[in-house]
Amino acid sequence: MNAPTTILHVDMDAFFASVEQRDRPELRGKPVIVGGDPTKRGVVAAASYEARKFGVHSAMPTREAHRRCPDAIFVRGRMNVYKSVSRQVFAIFEDVTPMVQPVSVDEAFLDVTGALHLWGNDPVRIAEHIRTRIRKEVQLTASVGIAPNKFLAKLASDMNKPDGYTVVPRDAEAIRAFLAPLPVGRIWGVGKKTGDKLAGHGIHTIRDLQAANPKELTAWFGEHAARHLLALSQGLDDRPVHDREPEKSMSSEHTFGEDQTDPTVWRRILLEQSEEVGRRLRKAGLWSGCIHLKVRNDKFQTRTRQQTLAVPTRQDLEIYHAALALLEKTAPDRPIRLLGVGASHLTDTPVIPGPAQLDLFADTPPAQASDPAVLDRVIDQLRERYGDKAVQRAALARKPEEKE
Ligand SMILES: [Mg+2]
Image (cartoon, rainbow, N blue to C red):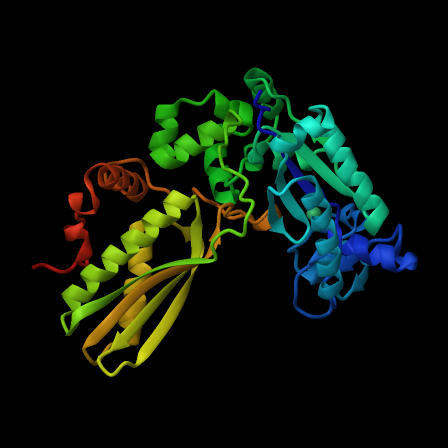
């Protein structure tokens, strides 16, 4: 009998601040802010629950935190200590299941589906086992969300914080009801801009989104984003837990048969490479936050350049435009022997939790045939069916102002 997919999201409570309170008893029960000196520039790395009562949260400028909570005790972070505690906690996770995907030093997704039978098919027993071991072995508390998928598990771990757990129902109707009262901002990928835009259309809660007209949503946000929003509003999310280290980077390189001096050829190759990198990102369910370019000339001089993106991407043309800008920066003055496009800073969850959450849909144009995300998907499908050369994006290889 197959056990139903069961994901835990385990999140340490106010991790850095709790470690400080654990190691320095005089800080217990006090508002503690990890993040250096309030008179200097910087941001809060973590705040104890006592400090959070004053509206202090991570990523807030330390000066603002000091203004809101003048009695707070500021301490400098001890990253080495946090990392070593983190290793202890992850060792506990890995005793339960090999399917552990770290989200950060203090949180992880665990796919416990295969372990359920050892626990009387009761995931709460697993969650409580983990929480008990963490309390005993590192004297800290963690909160756990238990759910059929990652999106719901992460939402749930936040609901009985600190030192609690929440079980999300399995039944589709019950999941809808569970999500309905939450603000749309709780949906994975919805940041401030998208939240404001939804509010402008009268959509404030997930209930509003569940009742929204898919055609209208598509007109406002584009097909890709509309589909994503509707699926998540129903609690549907099929991202797997990556049990091994996800790939760190992807790249595509090409050595010319003959050294090339023609910029049109360079650009065509860059486009092909960008498409290949984009296709591999989409296939792996990843986004890239940094695009790389490698250029080698006929003298075997190699230059590499990279560009960090404001918002992670997996769209061919966004990758291409970043690579092209990098090529223009290198201003090649000799024939080119090798070109390569790469992508790093890969993530399957392009969301920074809390106030700094990235907005996946902010600048999504309305749906149309030229919607890049739609186009990428169509091209992927055609190539899968008819081979790599089935579709060429030749016209797009030229810059808009260029005519041939
Ligand atoms: Mg945490």
